[in-house]
Length: 95
Length: 299
Ligand SMILES: [Zn+2]
Image 1 (cartoon, rainbow over the protein chains, first blue to last red):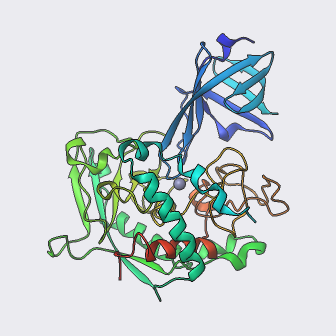
Image 2 (cartoon, each protein chain N blue to C red):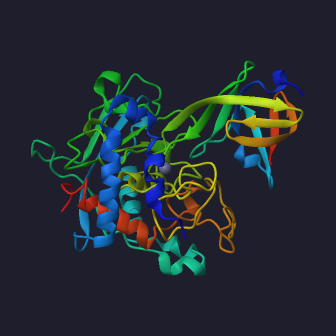
Image 3 (cartoon, rainbow over the protein chains, first blue to last red):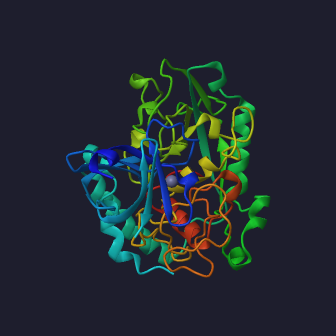
């Protein structure tokens, strides 16, 4: 896997999570309606926009940086393992 | 139980990016309010009995079906009056370890019978808009942006009901924010229990949740993606993040076993049929808001 595979706007398809594996889909995916949905935009130049849930449910956007080392993804302050990546599905594991 | 909230107060305030940008005084007022809240929570509630809050529902519609019926609006008010008095029958679903935590907020809601000029009203305004849907940017609260202005927030709880973009069921504003945007916004298909209300958000709990924010409640997970955040309430277990859907008890995070997250609390993110309680300390916090920044509203 490389930076190009991971670049894009991914939203958390939390309905598909299993145990410690988190599933993400492209923002264009037809998600069911949810009370909120988080995600991130990974840009090839290493910058990142985290899409979060604000304390009164308004959406938040927080800039940051991301980096891929082998299958280790550093996302802002978090470190995750990339389990698999395809154009329509990204699976990460909390580490 | 949570670590002492005092240390976390200032850091958590930093998340109000939008309000901070638009209103530099907001952060200082919010911090002052949090300290006042702690003092009031320690002192005990000043309001006795049940507080009645006049509500105005602003229906903003583009299509005929978005112009929801009075019956759908009444069904939402009925839900609020069960949830805020702990008379909702589904509180029987609370796990036995937390049954003793279920608390009556001592607030009831009535559609306003007098408008701001003292004229009789149904407590409902209806506005046709050219906008297909609104976002979380408060646009629905301004006529110039396709919405409608609220009524004075010191006398009325404003509830705007409209179409919203995907993955947004509603949003709110804490006490102490700008008056012109004070109130809650709810997606029309997540409002009430009848008409266009759609599963799994068809039991009126989006409004229960947003009005919790309007009365100063925080999310049960403390608004951080890890275990560092707090909701400033002592009787809700620390939780890592939002729960979705219909979780099975127990769901453990943040070393909060064996009972885990209190995901059936109205301030989590689960489906309408999976949330059914406020706690005693959440009620203390809401009553502190009614004695503080919201002291003018209600009787
Ligand atoms: Zn919320």
